[in-house]
Image (cartoon, rainbow, N blue to C red; front, side):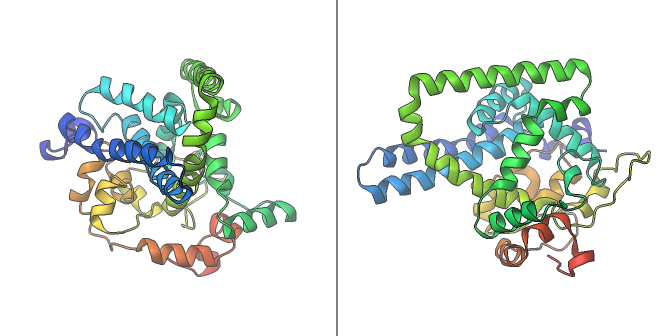
Length: 313
């Protein structure tokens, strides 16, 4: 497994590149807020769409900072990670610890906390119907479930962490909750006007990206047997990247689409991932994935794999 000490110097994190990367989110924030002050409804909604991309980027930047690999300096990763976590409504330390568990157990579907509930569909016809409708109508229930169950659910989190880490997660979740209540009390009207619609739109954007990464892939199930974590390089086959215009990928997604490279080398910063060559086909194109995935029933895409459906990406 790759450690930061083993990373070649040209692939290591740099503070200057990390801070340069923040220019685009700042431009999106300022322009989005500026347009949202307009009483002309078309301009307002253009501003909200722009802000939705800002919130998508804060989620990606939370992911990067939690790996302590976006900035060279640990302090910057932690401070900025908390900022992006607050803006994403995901507690930083909670994300970091549970996401570390994801990287540890990718390749074992029932051991990975982010996929453990996808080993088989619900026996409830009503629940499956809701899943199918939500998937077809672009209602981001999957992202919300992923977010709430993995990073806010203390009962689940406690199963994966030791007592010291769990106590720290619990403390931070309480602190985040209090801060949200205070912000809502003092700035509620401004938040509703400027940020609630855009944040809601961003939930759909986040879901579309999250659902490309490990869903509808044949991943082994341990069935409660003693198993060892799979090495990072061997996790690639249980992961999916997608491909779009390279400039959009680099400057708007911060290479978050290169998920195979990220799992192979999780300590390499996002802005360096495009230099990684895994010698694998560069597919699917995002549009191809989108069309195929959305043609499927939600329960089939999430709980089944190409082994069952014959659909490959």
